[in-house]
Image (cartoon, rainbow, N blue to C red):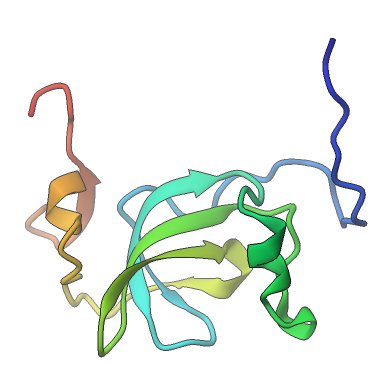
Length: 122
């Protein structure tokens, strides 16, 4: 027997949208000064309610959109971030990402794009 969705929050659409960004894409946050490489994608919100409620209501993202796991960095540090699609833009700076985990999961081509490593061959 299948369980019915437990999320009863109103949403604009129950359709799962195609992700705008792909693994290896370099993105930047729309409002905050950080950027990163996409290393995983959730088609809809898949974090804790506590995490979501910690975001001020006036800027809290809706759940029915892709969320991205990023190897992120700002001027001071490197970290992992979880960000809604509505808050990301492509990063067109061409600058490399310095996050220490990027070389473990990605190879960088001559054009500066990141490609997931083939774990079967490595």
